[in-house]
Image 1 (cartoon, rainbow, N blue to C red):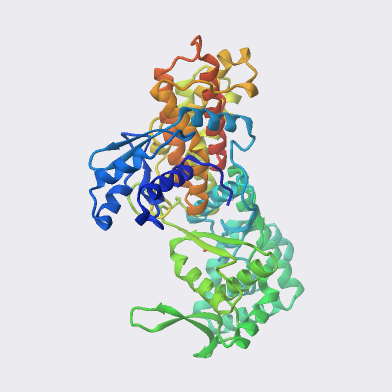
Image 2: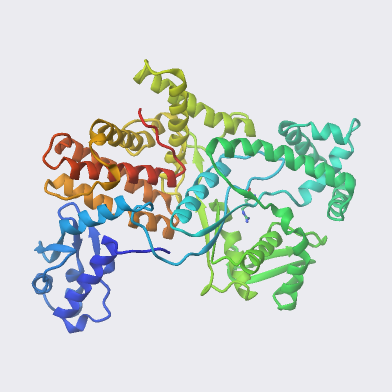
Length: 579
Ligand code: ARG
């Protein structure tokens, strides 16, 4: 992960050295976790309170002794003891202006250095011939944002769509399609997703009720795997129809992702099972080949297996994910594997990771693996959100409705705008609102879908951040022509809300790294929200145009605009130039 001289990482090392210089006992003690931003000071350190007990000295005395050690520092201009022994930290304004100026001069806004990693991120991943539901929409939005963040940090990112396009379900569906009276390849080619979903439901019913059809379906899987031409062609049509449906959603959302569905791993499945057997990891239980990993028991204390081959010889979701993790580590040579799915699959991934470790393919010293779970999307009734008819078209409608509502809001606010512009900005605002509402909630929790809330212009919303951005641009438009924008520099930080804005800007790299490391896009939205609020306070208190520090203040405005725009783009959100 890239890193540089961030405020939040540079302060601890300085304070650490002050502590060690004051007390020899504190060697090995880490102050990092004790330093945070605070309302009363720019930063605050509470290590003295933590150390007091262990050292048998009053926290106030510890803090005093540490504070006395500070000499001229580029980073810290003042240390003060507060309350029972807090150390209040004031950052040197020179440090702040230098860090904003560095941002202004760099295309990556001051983020540099660090080791490039190869990261495979598996997200979106809907299932062929089935509805793409809001859970997949969440995965798509979160996954895309994480991928963008990794890319911005300079990593080599592979975005994979692990589509459910293989398995027993297809045997069922294909057998059913073939048995239709008016079946023809051409007919199926010209079919649509609704039709496929209808056939799918019918086939499922037959499969559950009719043993003969069940047998046929199983034979159909064999035919498909064996390369039977008609079966293959039907399968391809099913995939194409489904692909076109979700492609429409990706296009609307501006999401790029490479399709590498479950079928891709088909040729590897049997050798993966063989390898697991050779390594002595497989136990046959009720005819199924299972891997038992320690620590996975059900409520009755029985060990839970990862089934890699069913008793009928077929492979399943687990087998495919074993093959996928092997492939991603060995062939793709990934340094970091990320899987974005709903929380319901946490156990599945835990077991896959443990099994891959047992097989000695995954070495956690070399490869980082993360399942990135998220909660449900809820409707206003507090129940699991459902699009009206629950099919794919409705998921597009859900996005379209956000755009339409955004357009209505813009129409009221700016009735005189030309239609083309209104439509363009409505698109940015509507889709931005949907994405931002999702990403700004901690993904671990459930999130309630509400058009009204997501389209508000106040609070932690896309519109508020966009509005702040637009404000930076209008200031620039007014006076920017006087200056060469790429030569602007912050030269003076006097007003409290001017300093505070510079400090907020200097924290951008930290926010991005937190989002990437913790896989939490809401770290970034929280940052952008604070930055926007801080910018508005600056705007209230600090005149830009005509001020003696006009150019320095304009530099802050310019940096704010660039950071907001870049930050939103890491969330997959565009910015309007006016609003
Ligand atoms: N298709 C699955 C679903 O809809 C998600 C796949 C996630 N990725 C994976 N490698 N298992 O639930």
